[in-house]
Picture 1 (cartoon, protein in one colour):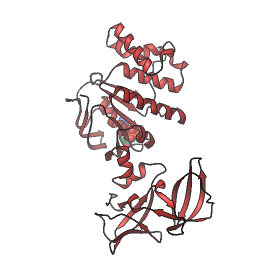
Picture 2 (cartoon, rainbow, N blue to C red):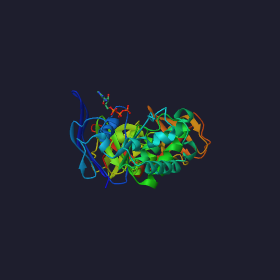
Picture 3 (tube, rainbow, N blue to C red):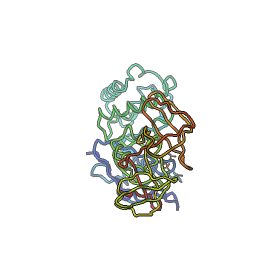
Picture 4 (cartoon, helix red, strand yellow):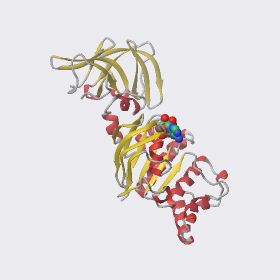
Amino acid sequence: MANVSFSKVEKNFGKFKVIHGISFDIADGEFVVLVGPSGCGKSTLLRMLAGLEPISGGEISIGERVINDVDSKDRDIAMVFQSYALYPHMTVRDNMGFSLKLRKADQALTAQRVNNAARILNLDALLERYPRELSGGQRQRVAMGRAIVRDPKVFLFDEPLSNLDAKLRVAMRAEIKALHQRLKTTTVYVTHDQIEAMTMADRIVVMHDGIVEQIGTPLELFDRPGNLFVAQFIGSPAMNVLPGTLRVQGGRTYVEAQGHEWPAAPQSRGQEGQAVQYGFRPTDVALATDGQGIPAKVVVVEPTGAETELLLRVGEADIVVVLHGRTEVQPDDTVHLRVSPAKTHVFDTAGGGRLD
Ligand code: ATP
């Protein structure tokens, strides 16, 4: 079994603590994405798992084995870096087979594994080329091929798509996902890009300032972010968030913000008069046609073909709404917003926690 377990893992660089006691488990065969803003510690956590960085406290296990003191090369992992780290003077074939050669593996076995990986990654025709003769996407595939050839227990990816242009990133994203579906190797993937996390992960670990903010499937995090940080990090365009006051009156729950009453679901942890942050996603708003709802001034209309993005203003607040299809709405029009209570998110202003 190649499950991975982090237990109270800590990391200090000198006096500076960057990982504050992180615990979670990754199941055998799972694709887990560590995501968070720059500096949150995701690469450091991955590098500790890879054996590239000593662990200051706690334990990391692969399978049943605690690997804190196991040499990187004996951890049975393979890592793919942003920089690809290919050897420029070696052909694709030699790059891919190099780790097995170092281990003095049988030549026939090496050839077989390299051919097999090349077939999976569509590199057959490129095996005799040098890295300088390849495109960025092809180099990235060679870097993945090198990892596959080792048949590791765990694949580690550190921002592997950052150097590719937007279109190629989308294509490689799908390739890596298909590869995982085929090989079912436990995978830990680091990115700062929440769309990569959403599209690739079985489960996402959202990190911030050296702690885990929330762990869940992409849709769990999208539908029920546990706190304001996750709410604003996951989802694109980002969730609309308005500061307001929670009102619970006559059995009705709503939030007062920008001079209007915004519908909300009952908040079991919220109290009348509490300062809150009221959130709803741009895709969870409808424009009312009967003049009922919260009035908003249209500032910008951005059609993207399949959708139309509206930038609106309510009081002092900017609000983004994404409509399916097209709209007749023009700048300076007044529209009326309808938000369904079940699609709203209310967070405590003081602690940031979700209140329902
Ligand atoms: P990015 O997306 O920018 O790579 P990250 O989430 O991967 O960010 P890390 O690279 O893990 O973040 O860094 C976490 C924190 O540790 C940062 O504050 C960083 O400055 C600090 N750090 C990383 N490596 C070292 C080091 N060798 N010495 C001192 N501090 C370090």
